Image 1: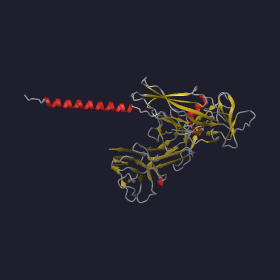
Image 2: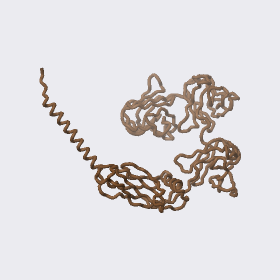
Image 3: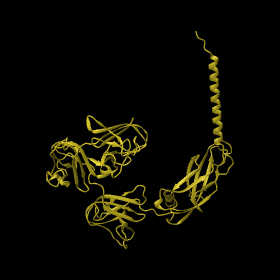
Image 4: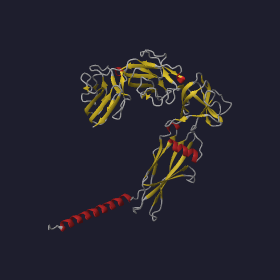
Length: 488
């Protein structure tokens, strides 16, 4: 039997125990040193002595209070800090007291926090200068050490009267008329003090804004012109209103701090989704599940549909499940596919349709802002390249990196290999920066991108971005205008 050298193991165990004990002793000494506070006095200071608060700076820092740690008299006991603030002359009898706990050596107030304290805690008059006093009280967890109080400092602060946190619209142009009890609420704009917005249908007529449901005053009315508001608090003041001449979809944005307002036709499309319906489409006349068009993320008014179509008809419903929905249709039945006119037909009557006479791949683009359509037969490119500082050849348009066509599918091209940190796009010719390209829908898209689009003459100049160098497999489908960027 092999004999085990126990002395070797015992020595190692003893050595390990010694190291643990030394480490524990070292940590204890370190913690004691951290807890030990010298005899330095507890001292409070502020980074500003005078402040004029303004609501447009609500989220900004107003004042920062800092203080020294004070002393625990060598007890190694922890110290809790309480900040006290009061109006000068109150002798801290109505102070705001903040228990800040252990290890806290600063307290920051935003403009809004400080203004709210002035108006709500001390009921001070907005717009007047107030002198506040502040001090720190330090309490040591060891009862043998008495509490300590810092020096008292003063800060002069001028507050503001905040504008209303709610705003409503009334008027015969508004959806709910002149009813103050049923006024239309506007949405506060996040991150913009005094900012409100609303979008929806307005009628011909007048409108103004109130601050409380059921109360016609105070109100915000038309000011010197259509771009400015005026704050109205009494019936004797001029009651001028904004006039809407043409009914329609409008966007309203206003700011109660600078009394500015804009009322303009909305730029949001009437439809977020559209579909393709007809025997020319692979899904046929199935109104329950028609083929959906793709919205252009860079222009929400533009919808595209790329597909291999049959000979037949199609139209574009605005909803599914009901043949009586509204449709985008041609101006006349069966126009030549070179005709670009399109119209919205409520209820789909008269029943007008586009017609595909030659089956094959097509790219269809509908612009519902300008009511035009492009229907083009698609011939796949036989060569596609990649150019950019992310590609192996850089920005060499004369000799860009070639993509490899899928022998079984002429629409699919791939590249597998090294990519650098940088940008890239796909030119459809070489030797000329002004050629056509496939580019991302949104500039700076990365490996998560799934969509691309054809861009004539490369304008606007969008590019994909690689942020991590390495080997990638990039696959594009030029018919469906899709892309996959996968790091290997």
